[in-house]
Structure formats: structure tokens, C-alpha cells
Length: 192
Length: 192
Image (tube, rainbow over all chains, first blue to last red; front, side, top):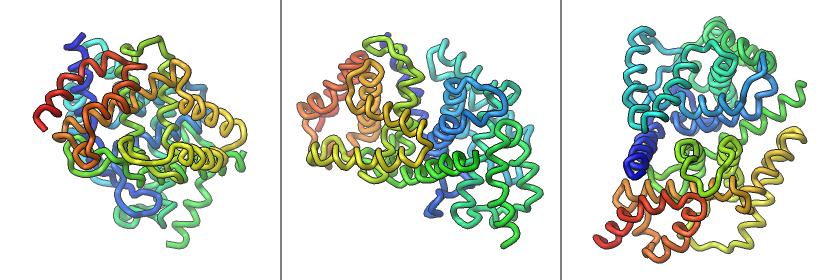
């Protein structure tokens, strides 16, 4: 028991580092960059509130678990802003190694369960994963809109790029959310 | 639908402010104070990992939802460090008003559901709420131990105070966690 608890605490202490990984998005008030720990909380809350808008019925409890875990690999791999440049194949390799190490801190049964959930999220094939990905993509758009475009000017984001890199993924799992935001997005780019 | 989505987004945008509420506890590396948004993520993860150590069987999905919501009132009421001085009756009044306002941003059905969960957490009577409270109390102890006592010296915490204000509550819902930490806690106060 004591060994098991030691492993569980070691994992939770390691997880604390996610609060120091900074993302490409700002807080809604623009005061600073968001970190991946607080982002994980915010999108779990997004999923809970927005579950009724999923394209297909989801198991919201599984979605929330996925979202609580999904960014832990960034402790080793860092955050890769969706509008930044990075090599997807190299990134996948680094993130898989991070998943091996970080989930590997847990007792074997939990390590396997969590790794499976993370693999499912990454594969984005099940209804739960597709919705989780949509929620993960939509929150930064809202934060950017709230602070006057946020990091869009810095990344020189065009409306086409936003549609391809973000809109398509949000629409796959939660089209009503994208439709609702589209007026605000168009207005922002028109004013730009 | 559009009105409903507007209310849901308004709530989620308001929730972003929790990332700017600073707590009495530091990150594990001692680099800065923890905020209540990232704390909410961390304890949801604690609950997920530690569910098997609950005194009585819990519905972990409900516990996680409770923990995602439990600190939102701090947007209006601020964080009240457990070792700080505050008037509990006044605090309860302020937090209830905050819950009215913040959950009241949601569509009526969700506002009622979330308010009920928050009331259940605050009352700390059901098995789910008791375990949720234990997890909420144990994480700061771990963070303080990780950074050499953290904010304990600042709040002049004594071993007796820690036992009464924290230990009793952790033991109520998850005694194995307190037993596991006790050696480290005793060692810290002996060395102090």
C-alpha cells in the first residue's frame, strides 16, 4: 500500500509542473499567458457545460477525465501553439516518450488506464475524443476574442488559417459552438 | 439556442477570472503562489488518482464535478487560507452571494444543478463531499512539504494546528493519505 501511495503521490507532484508550462493564449483579461494546468481545468469545465452541444452523444465523465490528463505530456514536450510551426512527426515522438515517462510514474494498472485514455484522445476517433478535441480548440478562440484578438496578431493568423486549423476541428465535435462564435470572429477580422 | 449558448459562454468567460485568484499555497517548486484555477485542476486529478483510498465508496465522477466547481465563488469572495484569520459566518454569507451570482449566469437548469453540487460540497455530509473535502485539504500539505514548508512559517503553523485544521478533515475522507504523509510532516516540524 505504501509503495502504491508513494507512486501516486510522485505522479501528482510531477503533475504540478504543468502549472509552469505557458501556452500561446492569454487569459481573457489579457494580463498574462495562460498555463497548461489552469487551461486543463477550464476546458474540463467547458466540456461539463457544453456537453449537450456534442455532435453525437458522449460519456461526459470520460471526456472530463481525458481533458484532465491530455496536456500532462507538455511537462516534457512543452506547448505547441496551434498557429506556430513545428514538425508533427517529431512532436508525436516526443509526446509519446513523455507519456511513457509521466504515466509510468503511476502504479501499473493506473498507468495503463490513463495511457489508454490519452492515446484515445490523441487518435481523435471516438465520439468522446472528438468532442474533447473540439472543446480544447474552442476555448483559446474565446479567450482571444475576449482580449481583442489576443495572440492572433503575434502569430499572424488569417481567417482561412483559423477556419482550417481550428474551425474544422471544433465543427467536427461541437458545430453549434463554432456557429455561435463565427459572427464575433468575422467581425474581428473585418475590423483588423 | 443562441440565448442558451450566450449564457453558457458568459459563465465560462467569467470562470476565467479564477486563474487570477491567488491562494496561500505555493507551487511545489516554490516559484510562486498557486492560483485557484490550476488548484482546481490539480485536486480533480488528485481525486481521480486517489479514489481507491476513500473511507467509503464514492462516485468519482460526481466528486470530480464538485471539485471543478468548488472554488468558483472565490472570484467574488477571494481565497481564505486555512491558516489565516477570517470570520466563518461572514465568509459563508459572502460565498453564498457569490454562488448566487456566478452560477446564476448559467441557463436555469444548469444553474440549479451546479448550485446543488456546490451546496453539497460545502455541507460536507455526503460520502462524495467528504472525500472531495479531504482531497482539497491534502494537496496544499504536499505542496508545502515539497518546497521546504512553503507558507507554513509565514502563517506560523504549529503541528497541532495542522492536525486540527487539516489532518482531521483529511482523515475523515481519506485516512490512508494522512497516515502516509504523517512521517514527512513530523520530520518537518522536528527540524523546524
